[in-house]
Picture 1: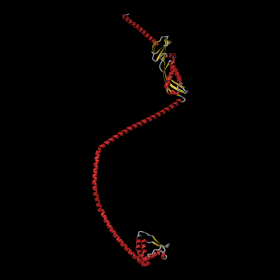
Picture 2: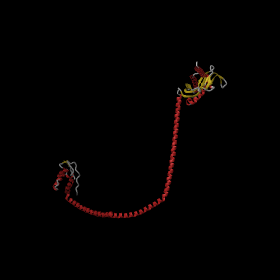
Picture 3: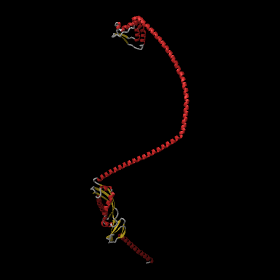
Picture 4: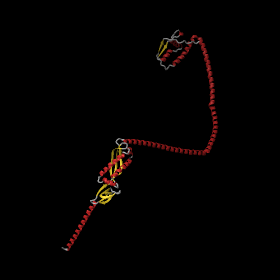
Length: 447
């Protein structure tokens, strides 16, 4: 074997030895790590490690056969110690009791939520180790729930439904005080307890609620009415203050304006008096001038009336008097002539005797007939009937016969044909004679 081969074999042998050594060391380290992992326990902040088999002296001087560690680490003595873990995290428990009688005998149903945990401080921790070590979390929650429900029934029996319903905080405080003693004995710690709902099956709380609601509404209405009244009073007071301030301001303004006017009037007094005096003097002078003018105008009007009215009136009056005297003289002469003629006619009438009246009528009948016929130009007479009337003074001769005789006499003496004249005026009218019924009174004869 060459020296090089020997050297190589030596190096290889050396590396093999070192490899075996390193492997042994690594295996030992692994075995030691596994051993340490088996015997070294690290406690979390939310748990407690109980090393059973060790001895520990408590604060009261007694000894127990276990050792509790909260946080940190500790090696377990193999074959002589056993390690158990207890969870200190929170446990949420729903608490509910039904038909629990309150003070006064009213059954109530209460629902709440409690937060419970295993106590992590001595000496309560030792109670938890003694009573709860080895139990599952669900079993611990069941024990806590039963304990809390029992305490809840005990607290309900000491409180009225009104107190339970109105002050749930007070109710929860009483319940915590009641349950804390029992839970401490079990090694549990009650963090919080909240009452969620309180009801009853007989409607007692509803009645109380309605009463309270009515009282609240009443109080609200009363408060609202009081507030409204107070607001109305405040508004009225504000309006009063505002109005008083406005009136005061108006009074001060009026007073200042009055003082200003008085000062202005006093200032203008002399000027106004002088102006008034000047106006009065001018008015007096103007009135004096007007008096003279009006006097001259009156004299002018008087003369004009004298020339235009009085003188013509006097002349007219004189003329009227002269004319009236002339007319009166003419009427007097005519009266005298008519009186003379009438006297002569009366004398002739008396001389003629009984035929004087007929002659007189014959003389007047012509003109009378023309006058009468001249008034009926526009009258259309279809028929003329003459009624016979007898007269006592003429031997009972009918009036139509006398009229016809008179018409013939007029025709013979005067040449006036009355019948033809009537026919020409009336047309082809018929003249009917009727029998006489009564005679008018006789015409008196003129003496």
